Length: 320
Ligand SMILES: Cc1cc2nc3c(=O)[nH]c(=O)nc-3n(C[C@H](O)[C@H](O)[C@H](O)COP(=O)(O)OP(=O)(O)OC[C@H]3O[C@@H](n4cnc5c(N)ncnc54)[C@H](O)[C@@H]3O)c2cc1C
Image (cartoon, rainbow, N blue to C red; front, side):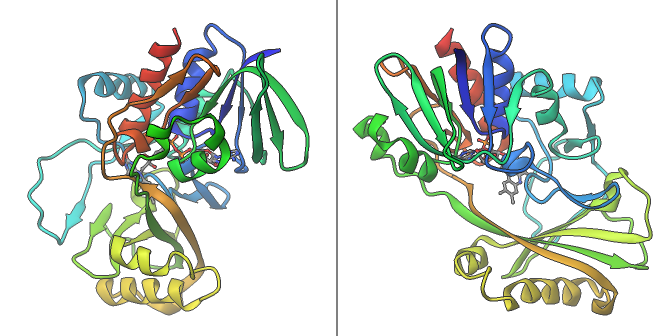
């Protein structure tokens, strides 16, 4: 029997799977078609792609900075420090922005290189029967493991594993905020020496110029647009049926940048229902000895990749 089942191939799932796989057998399952979770990448065509989740990593703590610098040295990550415009004029200190060499799930792929993994594998049920865990996938297939690690956002965790969570965990006030993201490609658009734009606007928060990441050369311009929190909250439950939502965000981008709408050859919307938790819980991760159940994820301690990574490392220490 395999030692650990890890639900989720995002930052926290891939990090804990990588650490555990040095000592134990591990199998990672993800409902998505590829690795990355909220740090995944959407291919448009050939090597043209959008980072439609995580935009960049700006490490803060010493330990995470050391890890990121190592990935930079190993050429898994590179810096993205060109022209970042900020029309909110918020006072901030400069920090390096790291991105994947080819995509923002590069370091996740690197973490999972030698780990057994299954994609398009939605776990619909988890049950513990005294000696082992049994997980059931959407296609009704079943697998048994000695231990289980869950890395999904808090609302999904509660739905899947309520029976095995302490009351104090179930009572946590974790508010995961939504985000609406739109990807567009424009033909023959004059290229701009701009990497990203932070807008001072009620609908559009941020736009990333994918071409500025120097991963591909093309006369097609790729932009990833992120909506403001307020507007995302208003639209997250209706963007799939109301097609005008995608167009409203694009129209605002066109108005604010002066790009030409008729040059758009591709557009797609993605709604992230559980993007970030801005608050901290009293925990960094959880390990339950009675059930051999581990829980980690960014939602324990903040809204960034760094929080997910710290949570996974904290859980690894508890398991050891
Ligand atoms: C639009 C957006 C932009 C962001 N930008 C940045 C940024 O610039 N910098 C930064 O540091 N952070 C950013 N973040 C936050 C960052 O993405 C997260 O902090 C981090 O990726 C969380 O990783 P995680 O592993 O904890 O969770 P996730 O990435 O959510 O991983 C959970 C995984 O579990 C899988 N899963 C869930 N339920 C099941 C199930 N039942 N069965 C199987 N699989 C399941 C999911 O598919 C997912 O892959 C951004 C987030 C969003 C949404």
